[in-house]
Image 1 (spheres, rainbow, N blue to C red):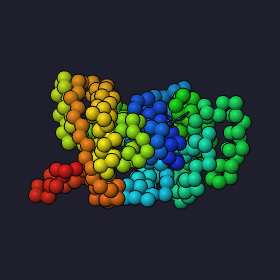
Image 2: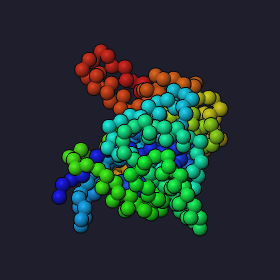
Image 3: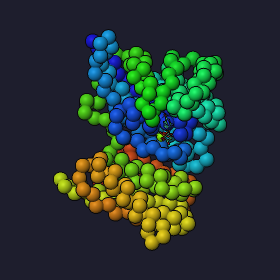
Image 4: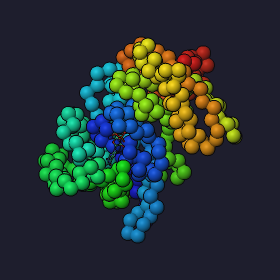
Length: 322
Ligand SMILES: Nc1nc2c(ncn2[C@@H]2O[C@H](COP(=O)(O)OP(=O)(O)O)[C@@H](O)[C@H]2O)c(=O)[nH]1
Ligand SMILES: [Mg+2]
């Protein structure tokens, strides 16, 4: 039987569980997750190879996780929304994810505008049904409401966290993909450079361990990355926007930075499979979220492009502080 394949973007409001679903479908952690909205800032590819089962074809599904749809109010926010639109472009299918336990997200209208504007067929996925417990009957009116707003190809209730409903979702996904080529080698699960995944793991710990404004005002840049057969040496800078943020990130007698470093190191060691020597710095970059240039420099796809350009024209190499 033929291979079915295609690009599938996962879009939805902040915190709907998009990254949790990506990880659950791929079966490995490739996107960071936190209870805070706007955890994901870039589009993230997760590649899923499904072997042939009785009565269905084998498939390669290229999932694209995206930042939550919201009205942006900073350069960072605008960049995040540009990532959503770029993910939507050229997709064969959209998975529209909503939180079934919290359907009244104020960004829902904006989300539906995005879907209606695009020509991509869409499946609706109602996530977090584990939270409904005895109130599963609430699902039906919800489904009716969404059906009125858009002609979804399928509507599928799931729990990404508990991995419920994923088999059906996968089956529907494959049914709605065209016959096509294998876009990526079978052993590749993401397109993210390891360096970027490391920065994300550190940022995840900041998100999990700090509060209020700090998680949103933080970004991570890798300064040094050396991977040997037994030991990796990585140093990274956590950028924040104010002295007050820095004080919180460092913590009393360095306790916070130590806690972030310890947890991040454990996670990174698991990913790399070697011992890690991790060094973290905290720097203030006032209002970096408002700086279009700084936000662009953080984008690893842009960094790679610029490196390629730099190779072509050696004197145009200004990537040193990226
Ligand atoms: N109860 C429950 N929580 C979930 C489920 N899926 C995701 N979450 C939680 O929702 C929060 C946001 O998840 P995340 O994947 O980062 O959402 P994203 O912003 O859409 O990528 C995290 O705390 C997840 O653990 C689910 O199926 N059930
Ligand atoms: Mg996410």
